[in-house]
Image (tube, rainbow, N blue to C red):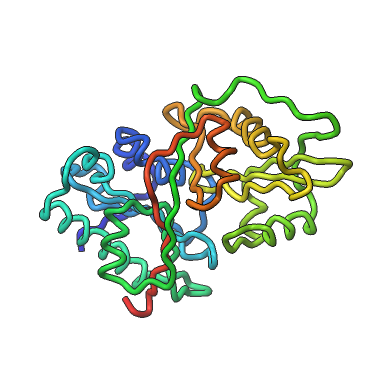
Length: 286
C-alpha cells in the first residue's frame, strides 16, 4: 500500500495551499480544529518525502455516522484545467483512491462502524473512479461556488424589524435539520459556526459554516422571502468569518435546481467554479 498517514496538516497543507482554490475544501477541513480520535490524514506521499507529480490526499473520519466522512483531493484537479488528463495519470489516481477506501474499510472506528462512507466535494475525476470501481448508495451533483474576500460587498443592512443573532435552543436546531434538503442532525450542527436572523424574537433565517469551510443549511422561512434576507445574512456572516486561507472566505455547493440559494450566493460575490459530487460508497461491497 502506498498511502501514508500524516499526523497533522503541516506536512500536507503546503501542497494544498499551492493548489488553491481547487484544494480549498480539504485545506479548510484540515485546518478546522474539530477532530475526533478516529480522524486521519492520508496522502500518497510520506511525511517529509518527495512529492510525486500526481498525488492524492484525503481527510477521513468514520466516527460521524450520517455526516460527511471523507474529503478527497487529487493534484490532477488543478493540473488538468485546460488540458486532457492522460491514461497514465488516471491510473495513478484510481490506485490512490482505491487504496484510501481500502484503508477506511480496514480501519473502522472502535464504536459504531459504518457500512457506507459519505464522500464530499468530489471532483469529476475522482467521481469517475468511484462510479466505475465501487458500489454507490447515493450520487448527487452540485455546483461549486467560490467566494473571495475581495468580492464580498463591504456592507449589508438589515430591514427594520430584523436582528442578527445565533440559534440557542434544541427546538431551533431541530427546525434547521427539518428544513434541510440533505440529512442533518443536531449533534453535528451545534459545534459549527452559525448565524441567524430574528423577527420578533423568532429565528427566520440561518446559515452555517461547515467543517470544510463551506456555507451550508442556508434557509429563509417562506413568509420572509423576497426581501434579500438570505443574501444579507450570508454577507454579514462572511464578513464576520473573514479570510480563511489565501483570501478565500468560503465556498458553497448549490443544487442545480436551487435558484434561491444560487441568487443568494451570487449576491455576496460567489462565482460558479466547477461541478462536484457527493456520494455514498458501500464499504461492505468494496
